[in-house]
Image 1 (tube, rainbow, N blue to C red):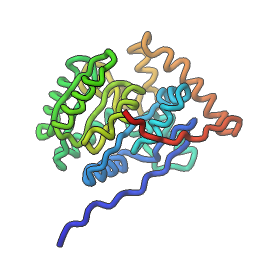
Image 2: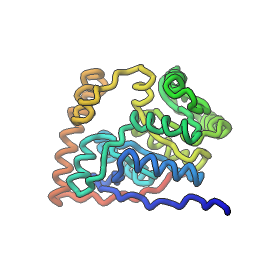
Image 3: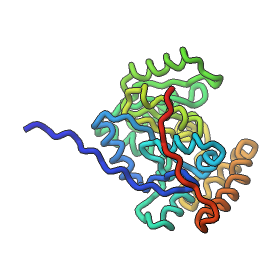
Image 4: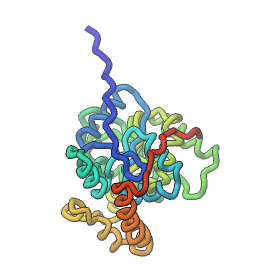
Length: 271
């Protein structure tokens, strides 16, 4: 008897947060959905959304379209989890980029998925791959690449796409920082043969031991921003001390109906 191809799963509902559709998921449903994409050889990308990402979307409508065209836009920040609960999505749990990377690596040892790491400062992708190999000895790593920080020419970009496709990964991890990584995934998902692209930003630095990660109790309490601000005040002060209060104000305006945020239809831009 011939095996039946995996059936396509229904897309999880999304909560409209200031025009960005946040997927009502937890870690297990996220992993299951990624499994389905890989089995069907689909092409999707995953954005891990934080308050910062949502606020960047307020400044750029096209970015909201990128988030909304994703296969999943997961609640990476606890405020997005709390909002989901308030709107009746009690099943939602935080799908934190660094945790998602470890969970998928563990799953991949059993399933045989191949990984590619694209991003980080020079040396970080290789260091990340080495540390993950030590943690998961049977993990299949197809390759790594650190793109130049300057604007890439069309020729250099095409070479990077060809290199990734030659490596035949199932999963491409993208560590360019949000929103750059989200735009990159949306622009390249059609030209890469990998089943899923996942933008995880700081996970490259955390798992490569380049930067300290907040203790778990701080992350669970939604106070990771305080820890990160204490580590990098010059870089992050505006993000947390300006964007966070502004986010709360806008969410209250949306909740009272004073301001409306129709979701921007997600369309994957052509390269």
